[in-house]
Length: 522
Image 1 (cartoon, rainbow, N blue to C red):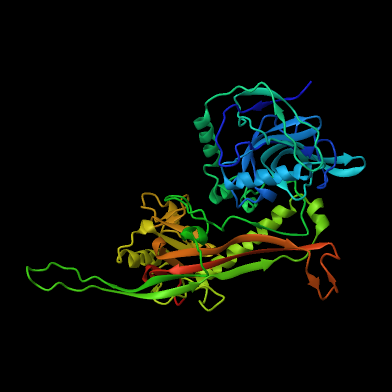
Image 2 (image 1 turned 90 degrees about the vertical axis):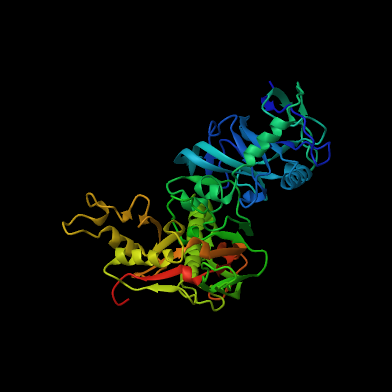
């Protein structure tokens, strides 16, 4: 009895060759065997009929999906009945490469583990994967699964697959290294082209780096997924590089808590090695009522041209035994987490404290012309006066943000009034501290360990912008010679990881930045 699967029955015009349809069938996992990660995926681990993304080559999360598909379990295999988006450049490119490689092409998948347990399989300690949530399937250079391959790929004129009905599919035997065609039976033609186009657009909608940081997918998303078990069934090549989402490229909406300084600053891509902009050094308004025929007063707005060079921020890991990547399921997640955190802290430090002398950025606390608010009474009063320094320039508190060290924020939250009750909970009092929203005097607060304890910052969100010249990349290699060991990492079966990016910082209005002295004599 032939297996059944759903087919799409709407025809669609593509920019590609009219004879190309983009349909394919691929086996991305073998059930009941020990794979290269030391896992055994059990029957029923995959949800039959689950829709999934077709991810870009080698799970490049910096690229949009190149297709979509439906997952099936059959004959001891997990298969994906897929469709490349041939009306996109990425989808068409992937389709033609996969078609040319035929059964040589291996496959991998990204997943979250919903149920698993450890045990023995043929005397070997393994992890049994009992239930998985698949986020995406991708063609890869080398798969961690056993006998993954492209089974069939459409190259003849046909209708685009959809979930309109079911039909039998009989995958042909592969011939040499060329991908073969499948024969789709009992097709029902419809004129549902526009509905299909909408379906594709809806699938792509919202697939940005911010969403990846708050949910599934994305090479840095592991850092925001504490307690969740996930994986990726591709093998680590001797060297490689993958682009990953920008650090904190998601800007919180008004009312949302700002978690890091990086989130507080607007973000923009940079197409050149530097950014040239105008910085305001003086603003004096002279506008007034003028009598008929009288001379109009002249306001003074002094600007200077500033060139901010993009600077590289990077770090390496120590050499790591390759065996650990197979033996420890969450090691890659750990590496991504600590490498991301290291970059984030270094960039945050540059934005706050950078000297402006290459290779350093010009930090907010170092830029010439910023204001200083001296300590007055206590931390809460002093912060309120810093807001006044902004408000007298026409900058509303809702457009500003505080940056405080966690110890200073703790001290503010623990402040008490005369009867010993906490300032943030005094009965009948208009609260200056809102812990739930992390606000002080109605202005959002972000915490940073990169600002000195006893020093705070308040600034206008429009006064600063960070620019990304080179997208964050996560790289690894065995091609390193260790002089102390007298051998290469390859000879010792080690690999090193590197994370790096390149940024510039623009400060348009230094007077909209207030350095706050949170203790007497600071």
